[in-house]
Structures are given as C-alpha cells and as structure tokens.
Amino acid sequence: MGTNRFAGLTQFAASMMAAFMLCAVAAHSAPKDPKKVLFQEATEQMEKAKAAQADIFSPVNFKTGIKNYQAADEGFQKGLNLNDIQKKLKMATVYFMKSIETTKTVLQEFKDCVKARSDALAVEAPRFRSKEWEEVESAFYQAVQSLEEGNMDAARSKSRKAERDYRQIELEAIKANYLDETRKILAEAGKSDVRKKAPATLEESETLVAQAEKLLIENRYDTDQVRLLAKEANYEARHALFLAGKVKQLEEEKKTLESVLLDGETPIQKIADKLDVNVKFDNGVEQPTDEILQAVWALQSSIPPLKQEIADKDAQISALSSRVADMEKQLGTLKTKEESLSKLIEMQRVQREKYERVEKLFTTSEAQVLRTGDHVIIRLYGLSFPVGKSTIESQYFSLLSKVVDAFKEYPECTVVVEGHTDSYGTDETNQRLSMERADAVRNYLIATSGLDAYRITALGYGESKPVASNETEEGRRKNRRIDILIQPEK
Image 1 (spheres, helix red, strand yellow):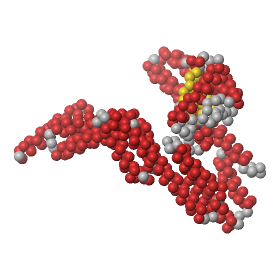
Image 2: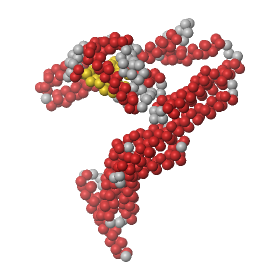
Image 3: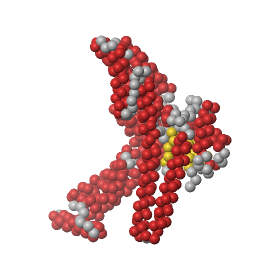
Image 4: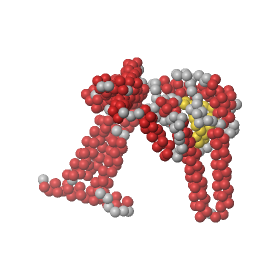
C-alpha cells in the first residue's frame, strides 16, 4: 500500500513538473505557481460566474461547478492523480460557463421578475419582511431550477408568481421603511406642541402620507411616485419637529422678529460671497436669490462649451500626434498633414459659430443647447404638454419655429425627435406617452420646416434616460422633455 502511495505521489509530481516546465518554456519567463497554472481557466470562469451573480440566477449549475472545483482542490492538496484533477477542473469550467449562459437566459426570460426583485432589495425588503422574503426567494429559485431543467412552462408560471410576491413585499417594505416611521413621528408630534408651533409643515406631512397610502391602493405597480411621496412625508414630519423646536427656542430666547429675519439673510449672504455676487437685502430676499440663481445658471451653462472645447483640443492634439509620427517616417508629407490640421481647425471654428448662433436663438427658460462632436442637441425645457396628452398647444408654436430656424444652420441635416418622461406612471404608459409626444413634434416640424419627412424621425424613451433626479419636482420637470438631435450631413 505504501509503495502504491509513493508511486502515485511520484507520478503526480512528475506530471506537475512536466506541466510546469511547459508553461515556463512557453512563457519565456520565471516559473509560475503550478497550482495557479493548472486551476487558471476554472478560476477565471468561476470569477466570471460570481460577477454575473450565477449563484443567484443559476444556482444548480453554479453549485455543481463549485463542487467539482473544490474536489479538484482537495485532490491537489492530497497529491492525487493529475488526470483526475484535470477532469474535475474541466467539469467545473463547463458548469461555470453553463451557469453564466443560464443567467443570461434568466435575465431575459425573467426580466420583469428580476426587476421586481431588484426593486424590493432597493427598499430593504429582506430587513423589513425577512420571513416573506425567504419564502419568495425560495419560489424564485424554484423557477430558476425549472428553467435549468428545461421546463419553461413551469419556470414562467413560477416566475410570474414570484414577481407578484416581490412587488407585494416591496410595497410592504415601503410602508415599513417610510410610512411606519413617519406615523411614529406624527404620533410623537401629536403628543407635544408641534401642531401648535409648526402646524402647516405637520399638516403637509399628514397629507403626503394620505396620498402615498391612496396611491398604494390604487396602483400597486407604480411604486416610484409612492416612494417619493413617502420619503417626502417622512422629511416633512422630521422638518415639523425641527421647526417646532426652533420656534420654542426663539420664544425662550425672546428673539425679535427683526433678528429672526436678519438670521435668515446670513446663509444667503454666505452663498453669494462664495459666488462673488454682491447682494443687498433692502427689498427682501427674492432679488438676492434670483441673482444667485442667475450666477449658478451662468456657471452651469459654461460647462458644455468648455467640455466641447476640451474635446476639440483633444482632437487637435490627436491630429498633431499623428502628424508628428508620420513626420518621423515621411518628412515629405508635412505639407499634406499641415493642410489636414488646418482644415480640421477651420471645420471646428465653423461648427462653433453655427452652435453659438443656434444657442442665441433660445432663452435659458426655453431650451438648453448642447453640442456633442458635430451633433447639436436642443433640450426643449420650455415645451410642455397637458397631463397625459401629446397635444402641442398654440403658445409653443413660436418656440418650435426657433427650432426650425436652427435647422437652417445645417442644410441637408437629419433630425431625431426624442420624447422623455419622468418616473411617475408605469413604464408602459411612459413609453407610449413619450413616443406620442415625439411623433407630435415630428409632424409639426415636417409641416413647418420644409425638411423631407424621411429626414426627421421620432423616438420615445419613456423614463429610461433621465437628465436630472426624479426625487425632486425640478428634476422631474427637466426629465419631462423633448430633445431635438440635429445631425449635420458629413
């Protein structure tokens, strides 16, 4: 028995040394760790499977891969036959790759269920509804296992049920995460003098709670607005507690109304000082606030041109670098390269002038004009539609006529009209509405611009491409927009 054991070890050592020597010779480098070389492919596939979350979306295949990988590792530690270890590693690699492919299928076939699961995780459903979460996770794994076994009908049926359960848990977690805490704060406020000292803010919180609860009942699948209302209600409840405490402090300190107003001017003055804006408060705080906002807008507006200027300079540097490299090879082509660079700089100058003329067509409240390479985007913040409709009202005809004027800077251009919405409403509703609004603008531009219909296309993106946070009213206003993408002829 000892002799056989020794022979096995000797065979293993010889095999490993041979594999090791081959790798060292092939790499023309210092010797590598034999185990690392042997396990490399299986390890790489295992890491890829982990990154793809195959342990969640293809648990059977992933576990089988892990089992073979661990068996190979144990065999290596014990010095077992190299061929047996390689077989285990090959099996591990195959199952890891299979788990990655299955994960892709799951993410496609179960995309609604996966989205529901992700949304539930985002509101910490496992923390607030741990028992229910374990149950629905088990149901989801059963759906995945049915898919792995090739039983698609059962997999889809189980996936739909899991999706409904994830959505239900998500709503319950939203209530627990935001509304339950808010109710506790409101109950605490009701026992103190908050209602007396900060009645309007407290009432606002109560109204928001009621609206959130109403929406949860009416439309359980549109959680974006509910989540925002619940968070805002929570904020207003805590805001009311703070304000009540502040009012009480002012009363105890017997502060005059004048000193309170002066204290209110201080933070505005600090912001103005940082922006180097000279503000005065002899007519109240509205004018200083407007001046600060104008300064901020001016700074924001300067960013896109600076970015484009950097991009232009990068293009010039790239052209110069290419020219220098060519000069080292062929000095005779210097004149040609210089002409190419001159043409590039001239083309960029013409594009900048066109862009600046388009930018001057619009006020800051009407649109933001952006430039990405040769393309120009007119972001029509000033164009609004009636709620849930795609009718262009007559008051916006003059704004759209400016868009038509912008087209004149780019003869033979093609145009893409993009419709976008905020996150309120279902994905399907927002997609449909954004497409209808884009179509309405496209039809108007075809009728008034003189461009051939085939040059103007419309696309609806729904809520999928926000440019601002959907957590605020201002952000949602910016996300409800029409973008006009002008693509000059090459």
